[in-house]
Length: 260
Image (cartoon, rainbow, N blue to C red; front, side):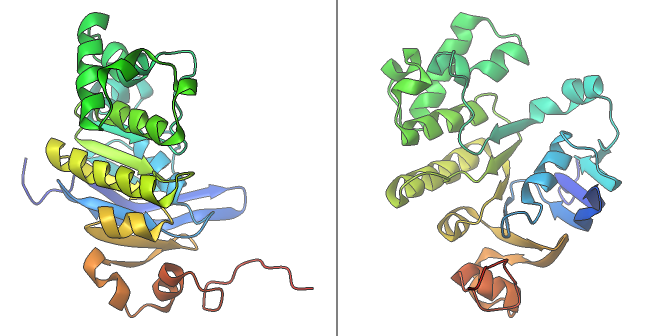
């Protein structure tokens, strides 16, 4: 595979829900080993973009390519066979299975996608838990027995358990205090670098952006209005980006605020 070929290539991606246009002709290349963070306000289409790349939503127009292969209209069976094994996902809120022990959660992809025997899968799960700073005795607990921060670590261990080539992080620090959020951000950086994976993160948490991102793309009203190195975000020259990263009410981004 050519080194200049994008790991993920999105071209002309459009998605509407009724009359509401959420994505309006998105073009985006994510190179191998890249750590891209997509920022934007609530409802700007960040999650929809990831779902279209994953194949959980079908776009109305445009294409999604993974390693140069057009997967936009690939059948679910073929996608599962040829593409899904490349992906890892850290869901917002963790999305752990309450009825499964921690090691069963972590090894879910190993047993369902790779048909690895349970005993071997548990050993791998324990190793992945160690990668996120959790001891082996956590493996036999249930998610309800863990703190929010520990649940997030378990979810991260599950995301990396299959050694994916591409990992998606959906609001990885939601619901965490600032210290635990920084721990999770640090672990994400470590795990992605260890795997040599390509990472796509969506967030509105600027601390996460500054810790995780190599490049940043900002979504607004269905378009990517700024793309550049994370090191340049404070000097983007873009009024929308400037308002967003500083959390200012006044600016070109108009929020629905009731004024009595």
